[in-house]
Image (tube, rainbow, N blue to C red; front, side, top):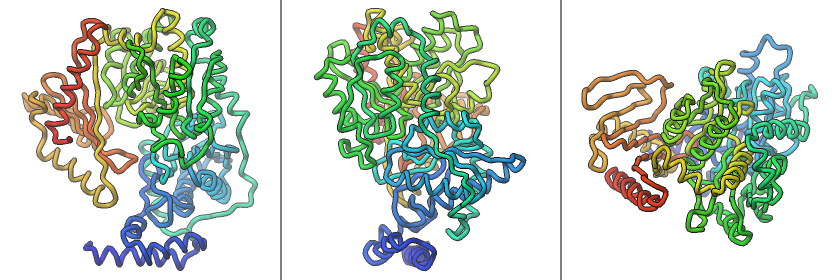
Length: 581
């Protein structure tokens, strides 16, 4: 389709909205695009907002490629149709609905609830904003067949999203993801949506499930004696304007912590995130106000959750007394190390326990597990795949914990998604446990590096905007497959894994073998020096991601800083060799 054909196509789609059953404000916005913003018009109407394997996510506004009442409504109608097909034997189908602090979140969630009601499906709607992991818990707790949460996680303020969870409390995977997509794609017009119901099938839920959920989180505590002794360690916590504002401090208090400092400006729930450039705990800027508070109060630990409170970033003091931010791999490794250590110390290890990490998460977690007699599973990127491993082993093996490098962690199996409420509670408990051993959190990090090896990871994100950007990302992956990397930073590639074809290639021998994972658009290259490079398009944002992992011997904690410099130079050399600088 050339440019003239594209413009004609999007104008026809926009004019259809102007003539259709669309509200006046939305029609006004469409008319403004037609009159004044050709580029915006193209991006808003050149396609339908894709209902992918994780649901919807996009910029809010008018148009078929935007998050708005109509795209949310069409997705909900498709989901309702699938639920009625899949659970036709049930006398009552139930769905639980939550939203975070994002703009329009309440309106979208109420819209979805009304559509479910109109389709004869009972909607359990949280009375106000709630964390995504509580939605996962509530889906299981109320015996629902599905759950949805309106959130765009850590994306910029212009975004919102729509995540679908299945009856096991996990985000949808095969076959339900593809089947739901098929049903959603059949809804081609807003007039196909049943917008309003009168069957009184919407039930408000809230504090009653909060209490049950928090009680379950408390059962994960492994070091109550340490918390009792060091209940007054100073913890700075910020929800970054999001849904963690009530439940995370409440959980910390239930664990027994008494010195919790907040950032009043960031306790205000606001989808515009006025105090940060991005509400992403991966970014140092998002934690800057919390770190400042930590310096003022001489705190022991800083924690920040993202808008829907499923991810957490932390800051600790290093051996020089300087505040540093730990990356997702470091926090995940500390948490798994703490969990396994305490399980061993309390004689809970029976040989049937396991942890789970994703393919782009540090191999240090695998090393910790194996050397402590705990099985370790690896899965595709995305917490739904971690949840799938938990589901497949339910009743056979015991899940201890796990996570992914993108700051998402979980312990216990009553939630089936990453959970910042659980993670913050156990990270704080780990800090108290460390103090009971005369150590800091940074000391614990050095301890596990000494025991299991020093791993250093890096990531580079290449942003590509709009239609052309999406096409460019696909072409980059095609080029890597057509011309595989042979050498990276002077080290020969010895193994190539193509998760799309599910093939592992031994570059030296030429032998190919199958990979026992679902197909995914991911490539991994492993060099003779042990360096690992992973390349994958983001499933939720218009970007392609490059992950790097190197391992360097660490003889003692005293040599940490020098060893880290060596690892950093290796990662810089990799980035340069790939032309990413």
